[in-house]
Amino acid sequence: MKRSTMAGNAHKLIYLDHAATSWPKPAGVERAMLGALTQPLGNPGRSGHRLSIAAAEVVEGARSALACLLSLPDPSRIAFTKNATEALNLGIFGLLEPGDHVITSNLEHNATMRPLRHLEQRGVALSLIGFRADGQFDLEALAGAIRPNTRLITTLHGSNVTGSVLPVEEICVEARRRNIPYLIDASQTAGSQPLVPQAWGADLVAITGHKGLLGPSGIGALYVREGLDLNPLIRGGTGSASEREQQPRFMPDCFESGTQNILGAAGLKAALDHISAIGIDAIARHESTLRQRTQCGLQSIPGVTVYEPRQDGPRCSTLSFNIDTLSCSDVGLLLDQKFGVMSRVGLHCAPAAHQAIGTYPAGTVRFGIGYSNTVAEIDSAVDAVRQIARWASHHRRGSAP
Image (cartoon, rainbow, N blue to C red):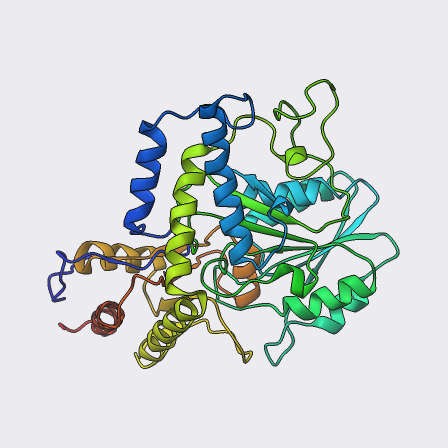
């Protein structure tokens, strides 16, 4: 593909893949993780000596900071996992058995869909709920899909493909009215929008540490409502109730078998402190402003299709687009190699979402915006897309650009 006619800037890197993982991390994350690696720390909860206690304080400090961000009065309702995928699997496999019925949306990530499809093959009935013609999530269809054996409702909070934000508060109301647990995947919204699981009435909320929370990979969490009976995903040593060979039933130990990720907890605590210093509302406003600027800029370019949610209200900091006559892979390659813009292309581990918006199986180009991005970066990225679209238009007509 000839690219010499585009005047790019390959030297300045513009990172727009925060929906996959955040970068750069706050400086305090590196310092905290290096400190946890170099200072004397033992195994948290496994011994009574000072080094074990110091390690436990690192883990519990991160738990308390996350509880504060989520406005939870009891940090023990948070169980640490290695990522949101494990947290979702814990919620799904901890509740569903053959003969049960589960309801989800048609925008879900494979972190949810693959466990559900696996269980579907083993006797769990599955219903997918979509959006109405006006772009609103179909709450009436969800209510109508509930059966006597419906054991779980699970949806994402924000789509990693379109940026749609589902009405989780209204879904919580319906789920509680029908006495059905509701599991929310907050991978794309934690750290970017206010989350208040207890105020919503949510039963389970899955979170990852390395995206909007700005922490390291390898640590996530599951909020579990008090009183909800959930089977552990794995069983083993917890450092508690060691006289018994059965798994503890109290939080968070029942879901945290094995040595915990001390380095991840240290990095996550530093990231949460960084977010607290800025304020979650300020982060949400900044990302919303940049997303709207990106959307308006892309929609002004001839030959560019933006797959924008039609509903009113908040959106998460992600949007997808395509350029006529070019594959999303070609566009992503040009953005990277010619303009230094990092995006993600393809199906984004969410084939159901792409089927819903009509971009399956080719996929889209995705811009995932983060708090570290600037107006100048957004304008440069949009201009890069404009140059690529102009080149594609000339190329299609067979004339020299």
